[in-house]
Image 1 (spheres, rainbow, N blue to C red):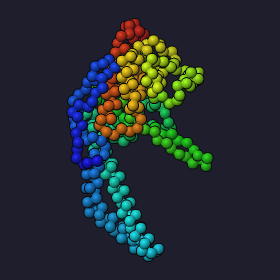
Image 2 (image 1 turned 180 degrees about the horizontal axis):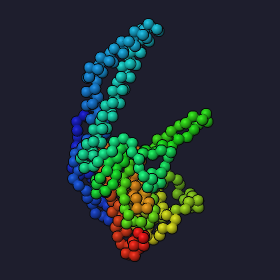
Image 3 (image 1 turned 90 degrees about the vertical axis):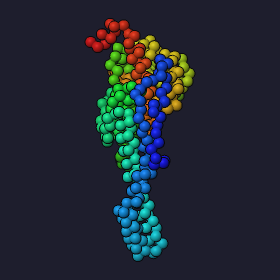
Image 4 (image 1 turned 30 degrees about the vertical axis):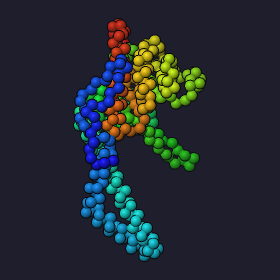
Length: 315
């Protein structure tokens, strides 16, 4: 990437929300395009530092002399080259880390968010936030997110530990990017609503449903059914779920399916997610705007409930 700071549009592209209105959010300040944007500048600066040049040269000469003395000049040259390559890799990693810090700081400032750097814990609000043996946010941004969602934007990781046949421990790291908010009014609507990416074959749905407590919500959209599985709680009202999943909402969801977008609503906590750690302004903005659209649809349906339903739910 070029070291120049290229600007994102003054307002990120906002898809229409499920009600058909464009999603609105505060004016977005320009930030670097992604976490690699300033890496080249940092790399050039670090390579020009006297400590880098002199240190690498000294170590390369030592490697050349020792290698030549032990196994001949050819080996000495290889050792010296390996030293230079190793030094470059170390400098590249430092530059990459610095560029990520530039991007995350600029993104937080440009979007008016508070950044929490490094590992931080997340409450176990939904099944995704309870997965694995360990779980944490690598980066977290709090405040009013693009799209108007009041909550947190997180680069989330959970770790799964397994042991091989020799008993050696192996750790798998699974990454997601999350947009989290609280929607207390939706507890009267449904206790759970999970819209997750389809993992299995559709012809297996009925067989799998025998072994789960949650209810599957069938929908008319063939495109959505190919990409998603939608569930509500064991005792939730299917009719209310189908009202939330209106035709316009399903059309909107279909348009977002290529981005691996999914969401979980549990006890009034909404966690929207995409796979992987997203490190570009456009991708982070898009997730926040999509999350705001889902929240809008859920609030809209919850607001239409009879007053006695909301009162009974909160008591």
